[in-house]
Image (tube, rainbow, N blue to C red):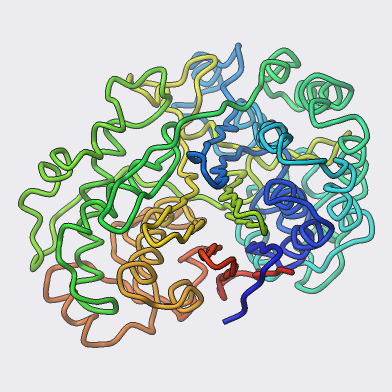
Length: 526
């Protein structure tokens, strides 16, 4: 186990983790390190995240309640169901210009987080925070196996999209793992933000370039839509457990589902990790939690239920009533895929950030804007065109998000920031890591690396099966099969399970981190 004292970053790409760790070594705080990490990830993991995506944050400072940052973009003012129906579509498409119909909120989240941290001391210059991303984009970085594989798997959808081939293909083919990719136009955009300020993305010269390129590509977004984007400070949802408080983001995220799984599973008397009861109990809790998620969650302004009301002891008792610890229940889930990055930071003053960003599908809408090198997200395909409720498309609404970073304030003084990528897998992986580490005492690295499961959809494939990595004890696999679970065995350290990570602050000042061996990441510190 490697521990640090001055600062720590966990990220799914080692170059991004080092970018954040270097900021901490220069005296930067946890938020500044997170912004440096976020920007670097937009370069070295461009299939997973980018300036054209959304993001969410949880920020902890000693003696204060955690603060949430909602950096979700809204549907444009002209984005109504009729523009899709007139194009012969019965849903918001996953690719192309009509998929790029919600504003990118991630950069507004960086701005809000830095404003939140401003009272903590003399800030580092923004240009310094973005410098690693600028350098990596201009000088080049090695293409990851993950980028190569996901580019290849979606090549037919992505290669015709505006600007994609010019930026992300090599002679019409996915660049080979380890080959050097340079993104000079994106480097210029990042450098401009460092010089002009992050607000330039929404209300300055870069905003004018983005809006013009979106219009030329056929997106319904306008410069006025960009100008209206501001991240919001939100009160996190909180689940109180015997060992402490667990925090997550309110809607439009699925943070409630992550907390419900923990709240239900904690009541089941699971005896130990790596047992039938551990996997079966959390899987059955997931089914109950996802039913609430799919029925209730979406744009908060259109919801009728208070998400915090589901987290009371009485509500958890009702929701968990009749949960069978011997037989698998049938279920129908409205699942979602997702390519995402979670990253976490901590500093020597006891501050921590749990952050998540995404373009949604690999490379989002596939639109790469030529004036900036920005890849635009396709998060709006989570909207529904022809049904009411909180996920119905309307101008100015926020799309439903699978993104949800987690933060636990434990009774023994530890602070645990953790999270994962992977759509439906995010709440399940959070539950696996938290239960293994907090309830059953596994080390942080062991809890992140241990074999995982996934109920439902992954990487765009509609499936109701319970997927298990091959490292599970065969006796557990057989017990799950006898209980009625529809099982699908996948490879060891399967990419289907997504990339997870964690950062933990101990009361004695030690900082401990873990990064997923399924990723290209690292826990880097000083």
